[in-house]
Image (tube, rainbow, N blue to C red; front, side, top):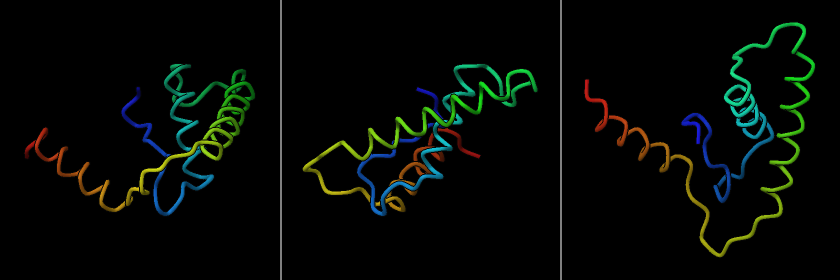
Length: 89
């Protein structure tokens, strides 16, 4: 999985549409190899982002779990700690 795509399921507060779209954009960038598409490919690129965001939103809304929601702040702090260990300054 691309490192920039974060898990979006089972968090408190719940995922936003902006976060879903950002993940879809990262996915399309990774798959297409384009950070910014050319004018000729822009429509297809943006359509793919919209479709993947819609499917992702449907998926996230249909998933169920018995696990308690994870705290975004705590997860971000853990990620920063792991990063600091991996890449000391």
